[in-house]
Image 1 (cartoon, helix red, strand yellow):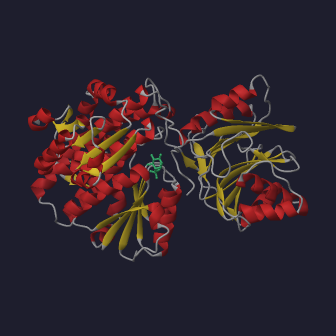
Image 2 (cartoon, rainbow, N blue to C red):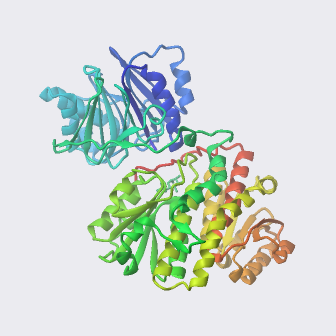
Image 3 (cartoon, rainbow, N blue to C red):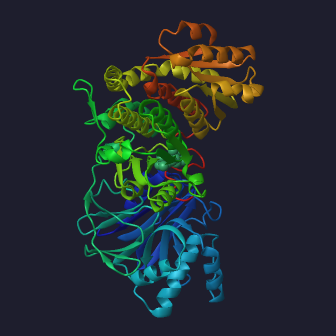
Amino acid sequence: MCGIVAYIGKQDAYPILIKGLKRLEYRGYDSSGVSVLNGDLQIFKKKGKVKDLVDHVGNHRVKGTVGIGHTRWATHGKPNDINAHPHVSGNKRLSLIHNGIIENYQPLKEALIKLGHTFESDTDTEVLTHLIEEIQTRDDLPIDEAVRIALTKVIGAYAIVVLDKENPDILVAARKASPLVIGIGRDEFFVASDASPIIEHTKKVVYLNDEEIAVVKRDGTLSIKNIDNQIQNPFIEELDLKLDAIEKGDFDSFMLKEIYEQPESILDCMRGRINAEEGWIKVGGVETKMEEFLNAKRIIIAACGTSWIAGLIGEYLFEELARISVEVEYASELRYRNPIIEEGDIVIALSQSGETADTLAALHLAKDKNALLYGIVNVVGSSIARLTDTGSYIHAGPEIGVASTKAFTGQVTLLTMLAIYLGYEKGRIPRPYYAQLLRELENIPSKVKRILEKDDHIKYIASEIKDATNALYLGRGYNFPVALEGALKLKEISYIHAEGYPAAEMKHGPIALIDENMPVVVIATNMSAHDKIVSNIQEVKARKGVVIAIINEGDNVIKEIADYVIEIPATDEPLTPLLSVVPLQLLSYHIAIMRGCNVDQPRNLAKSVTVE
Ligand code: G6P
């Protein structure tokens, strides 16, 4: 969602802002803009991509060493040039960028209109800009103090940066429930929604906490206050991130790069946590809370999107291997119900970004109910990582493609390790099976590599079904969530309508849709349900559906009846999703490319959903 980048220092701000905005493109957006101060505010805004903004700026020489830039994902007001950020105050003195939603913008706007303010855009952000102006001019306050007081009047979520024409040597930044990072260079500062626009300049960063207001000055000083006006000590951290991790390298897209990174990213997730030869597995964040985990009455998994689907696999794993009762919840639903969460429950938040607004809100609710909060997160230092009592990073490295791939397999790897770890500690897994699961888990990266070698075959199948308008994905047991993920991937990036279903449920609805134009992807690698899934395939074939089956190598029974098969290496059933999802990622990728879609930035989607 909205991306923020800002610079103050000795260099020209404009090229830094534009490069930073390009780095933030992956978050999803529909317009962008910059504001650079050089005596006057030079403001350029444009609907579309950052490239459209650059074309719009054209030959204008945008000079100045302090500036702010923004990619906007529309919430209030449609995507157009006027609603794009930065917004300016009525007196044209302040310029502001914002990520989040000001929920009480309507009454604030009405009050400001009564005071004589007029508004150009439909945005909540412009209201905040005028509110700061009103407070600043009415009480003749320094800009940071005006920002602080204005924020005490605001309900909602925000990450903002404010540029004041009369104060060219400072930038003011603040956050609540939307992320903001400050990069500390030599006599220069960078402010951004995440570290990606910062790492090529500096590795020293400060993550702002909720309701903190930072002032960065051209003289190299940084000061932070909270909204109650108390001085806070900045905690400076060193970023552990390499530039090539956020660049495409030799790949045509981030998504393809990330699919191909999976043998390595799964290995990174397991590194130091498992050793089959020595016969141990451990997950640090759980080790310290082992008593709570062993005695947990129940685990509630809260997540959104692909992370929710990984959570569903977690339910199958925990229940089978550790015999712990699990509920998987859409965070957006959980937060607005009156859920029964009690002391002794463990709430696991699954999130790639660690910033998803609904997941964060669900965690706050669970915290109030005294549950233990455990985070499984990819982005180091993110809000969920900091809010939870304990947690584990999946170490997938930056995921830039909007459609999640390597983060999904990282989440599933971590959940699998956790279920085996707890199951064994609880005496639920016999030693020989435990040893076998560890060995098999260690084999997963090389088996994923073997699946990637089938890419050309998968591309061929993609070319056969690329013109479909609907698709059905079926699976049983561990492969039911995989069917959901396969369908989600296809609709996200190719805009083909797709449904994931438990194979047997097909008879209760989707079977009515099956005809010769309907590709049906059947994930049939779990041998315990093999006969049943063969029957399901027969049912599809009897209605002339086109069956694409993901099968274990050498499964001649299904090979005989399916139209197309993708053979993948066999593994133990609880580990199946880590393999069976990979051909589905490639299938949707190729279909999307063949249909001319932008796989990295699909329309309307955002990578990090920081508003509810
Ligand atoms: C967005 C992304 C999805 C992601 C979901 C949850 O919808 O496009 O890929 O699965 O948010 O995000 P999280 O960062 O919490 O995993």
